Amino acid sequence: MGRVWVVSGESGDCVFSRSRQVRQRSGERSDKRGMSIRQLILFSAIACALPGWAQTQPPTLPAGAPLTLVQALAAARDNSDVALARHTLAAARADIATADHAPLPVLSAKAASIDLQNGVGAGNVWSRKRIDKAIGLDWTLERGGKRALRTEAAQRTADAAQADVEDVQAQQLQATLAAYYDLLAAQERARETAEMERSAGELARAAARRVKAGDLSEQDALRTHIEAERARADTLAATRDQEQAAMALAQLIATGTAVQATADWPALPGADAPAPGGDLGTWAEFRADVRAAMARVQASRAALDNATAQRKSDVTVGASYNHFPGTSNRLLELRVSVPLQWGYHYEGEIGRAQAELAQAQDALDKARRLALLDLQRLQQATTSAAHRAASFDAGILPRARQVAQSAELAYTKGAMPLSDLLDARRTLRATALEALAARQEHAKALGAWQLRTQPQVLLGSVP
Figure (cartoon, rainbow, N blue to C red):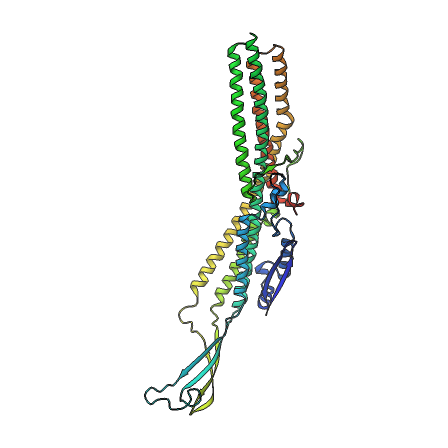
């Protein structure tokens, strides 16, 4: 008989089924397979209880209302890509039930010794006619622990599928975070260009009045008009980019309504703030993609042991009750059958299992290496983006605004030509957009780093 452990999470139950043979053999090979049963239950309980990974009902997003980052991440946890991964997990868990049962008994019935030459005699066909009738049962007894091994392989495959769900969720969260800050930057870029368009339009109207008064040349007025048209074109382009960014975010969070991000940029660190650090090796080891690769290695080991166990032939035993009128009404037949492994000892199955184990081990090594490199990349990107955004916020952008204000004042007093004023405005516009891009880059890099190392910082308040 098998047993079922149910580990309750905040929004659902995680069910794990193991047979008695699996429990016994897992204890015997705990040094080879990794986690023991107690560790497996504890780890599963933690995984189910994590608010970031629990299967929950997708939240209802308010139509037209500003969307916070927490709301966007909560919606992305259960989008269509995550749902597909969960279906794969459900199929993998169903494979456990498929593997964890013995071969079914076979019921057979026969009628033999029918004499076509002399006939079977008169009377009732069941009790008088000379026909040997029999009914029997046959059982196949598996040897070598095949049931336990294939069940363990299915369990480890399900563990890998569970880690795959978490990995897909992490990928969707990262994509949603990047799309959210793309939308936030597009909104601010649209507001910035709209303000520049308004300022350029006022300057063009003032230049037109000065031309009528004979205080400004027609050529300078045309230059202001060109600047106003360029600013209007920039505003249209920024509006189009905002609409596209909103559509990209809506696709990730599976909503058909227009979305709008709220202004919640992460705070910039100080100039002397240290780079984000920690034990990258430990973080890499506990990443979902690495844990999935580890589970597949364990599944491949169990599959190799199962292939090796095929060399122990299964025994089929059976018994039949016979009824043969004229001879005896109670005849018993006992039988045993064993396949003869002459000339073949499952070398093909064992060789394939060995190759798949080597492939899984190489995949694990690659996953560990890529996970560590990805964390190093995120760490470096977060540090460099923070320094760049801080330099724009604390020094470059304020100086550009000061230069533009001084140019405006000097132009109104006639102490600066129009060309210098336009250059100062262009410099301010370019600097403001670069500062916004630096802030966007920092927010995306910091969010990706936190999702991979400290997801509770972003997901702690997710319902």
